[in-house]
Length: 259
Length: 297
View 1: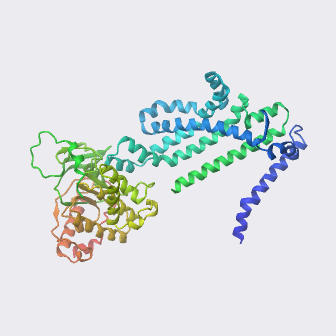
View 2: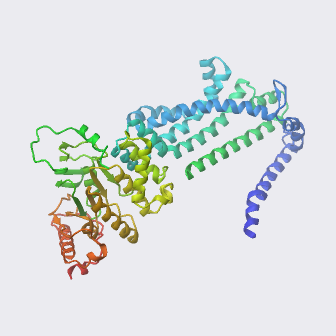
View 3: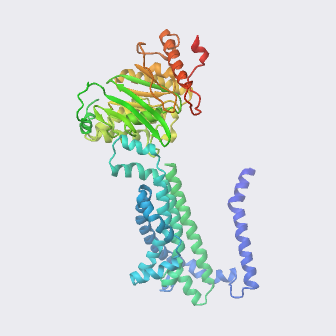
């Protein structure tokens, strides 16, 4: 009885209290020193239409919040896909070859911490169009956790498994796909998950700078239009979607490990 | 059961200029092996005849696993030669199948999948139905039909080792190498699997090299016992032929005078290598089952 109560407390009541405290601080801030910060009530009133009709398209710059989110997710999916298609094999090469590791690890360590705000202009220079530049930026920023975790997973493949491959005289391709890939997969999945988190993080920056329709583009446009309530709407949407994505990947990872 | 496996052996190539006596299936000739500054094996020579069961007994850490890696072709000697069917140091292959100390089952495959991986590779020319039936047969042989769809994590240590044995036997190797296959098991499971091994040794007619730290286990299974002296610079001692008739019963052996005689002799030899004058690194105590006091009676 008390156990279930405690669990209920931890799962619902306490998180609600946390949300309540933040909303309270937000109200106090908007009522006192931050004059331009919309209050929670005002934010809800102004955002209502976008939330209640989430898929409505009233105009190019005036669409339901989930419709914008969908555009952003499409963009993220493309960049993320490229990141994984390039990152996973790159990680395998790094993990398998000392030579490759010595050659490319330094440059990877240098490129890894570069901000999306720095990649985007370069993408615009290369591709001349905002859309591919945004996807390029997402790919460049989100690739690294996949690369590094894959390399780690490949290095961690137990020698015993590789000896099984040697005794059975498995071909190189079979050793790769039947031994190394499944052995490294749990590590790789950790990389995929971190990469997805970064890809979603980058979307806002990419859309803000390119003005592309999406949740990040909408945020920047509403800032310029002085509708500050929608900035908060966008922030909350971005946070919730990111949380949801991470949960989904976490569940997939868990299933993989249990399998 | 022996079709298919031979096809690969022709590729190993005969060593040039060896007009020596045939019949030695697997040989070590004056083999030494070091890892860094640790001299593990020194001047080890060994000849394995087709169809015999040779058990190498030694202390933990004496270099038994190194020895079996050399025999399997997973490692190369610093000096000396490993010869398999006359070829010098051929690459590892399924004719010399190794049962690993820690099973080395692939955790993402089921028991069936682990055996099937080996069977599908070694008998790739067979039809899928034939390979499946073959795999099922060997899973059955080690008594795991009921558990064939389980992953290694869902199997006990003894069951895992049975899968590993099935995987090795199913590939029909010319030499079966067993690297302390039972050492990670609890005493009861171990005794149980010793009986299973005794049956396999007796009925399969395979050439088998087993390394173990258990003298009783060695006597139960061996045609010949060869002790490996305490390391470092371990080497093989004099061989002890085991003339006890098969089938051997683990429980009855204790009362067999031949058993007691050999047991004492092997243990005495192993202990004498420990007292050798050269300085030896601290070693874990030998895991000889039974108290030494019992030996002297």
